[in-house]
Length: 141
Picture 1 (tube, rainbow, N blue to C red):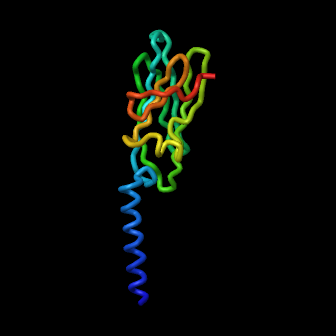
Picture 2: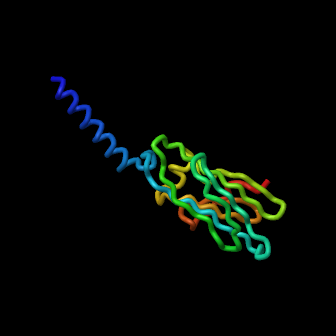
Picture 3: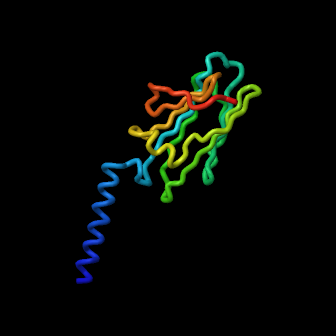
């Protein structure tokens, strides 16, 4: 009887994990996401957009982005589903910190393509999960 109970529990757990990964993949830790920050300024060829990104466990370093340049990386959701990447942006006298990727906010927001894209413009920061439809998320100030 004890053996049947253990087999039942293992099979139930396996079916639950399969169901979760097929029907609700955004809640399944271990998935990979692409994050991209694009310099969308229209006239800053002499003054680059400076970006520095990091998480608690990864320092991605900094870049100076000219018009149209991007800074991108791929991340894998950790076992605890607690990934959090922050970026600091600087352009001329303006400076802004923002969450480029944060669980749980972005698990669903970056679906179905598991892509989190940011377009930085003079008037603010725009988000897209398909790089076609952009929505202003916040301003520089």
